[in-house]
Image (cartoon, rainbow, N blue to C red; front, side, top):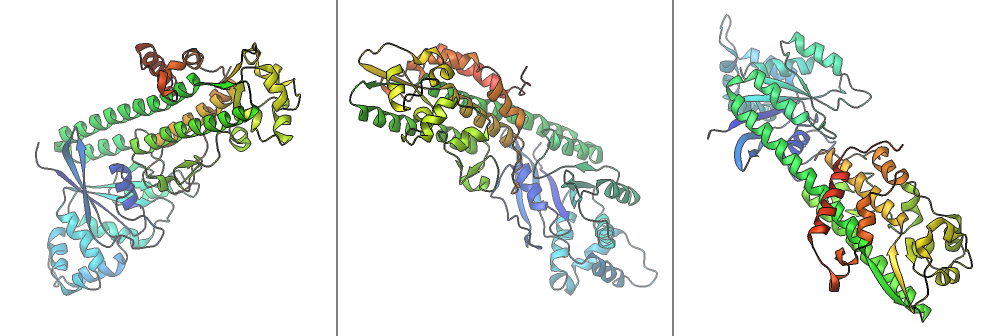
Length: 463
């Protein structure tokens, strides 16, 4: 299985051909995606691999812009009463002077399709079916290569999918696939290759191998992503910091350091996830993940972050923050091990103790202990769950905002924290944030694996 299957990606200008290439290649850097017409001016190629072996060569081509005039010109080249097949007509056009001048872009498309085994005809399903599209298809069909229409943007409200399917059927194209390059369905790529098999049964072994390899890659990527998120959550849940009882300035300094450590740990996880899914920091600038330049828009310790994910704080904590003590949301979402310190920081708001549970009440033994509160862990978990779902369903051509997935948030907002979080809290040696005592033992790895399974599972509806 050495000779590659060659697929030309063709269609009218500005329909999403380069977007399809990016999504199939999982490469945001391929080509240029723009709302301007005629962005792609030359043929560009890339390969799809299965277990490290090249299976398919994809060729991105310029958009066809003037098919009506071109078809008339091709017809004019034929002598009266001459009967030759479609490929001969196209080859005669490619040998004409106009193929290098007026119709240079269309010539590149037709030349590449003739040199390929099949073509993927990308359609912007939001466009009305016009005469220029029919003439495009007449010209492409003249190349005598299997042609698979790919309906793009079918999820948009203005999609005309039904009209396109009817028009394509009238032209003899009955094998059609819907594939949204911005938000492809999880099995969308496999269905595209399966449709190709119906047109090219002799390529079945190659395409089935590619389908299987892609499925394995997706599963490994999903599992690796869940583990990245789970390891970060265990690190934060297990983290504890001892703070001297006096002076009070020691507490403020410790809080600042702990905030920075948790922010940095979450950012490390975010960077790792973007690399895993082959997104760069600026690829998600416009999305509602919500990320800006590869960083969370709202600080984990800000009221905006908590309200965005629907995590509630007790009224005592909110009152303490509003009083201007410089401690974000009850010491920025970190709990104190001594009741007396809480009273001093939130101005006597003792109702806070009821909202944050008995674990905040301890004997004053000359030091205080900082640990991540449920509020912070819930927000961290919700942000990671949302990010996993968004990256899994985001095409590499996506530029528009992503809708926030409420089920991914609700499991962290309304359900009990996963038992693995509670287990991690009893093991400060499991946190890499405390490098001096860190221990990467079997129990830690087992806990991370179980939490990763929870993150990777479908988000359940809270009872």
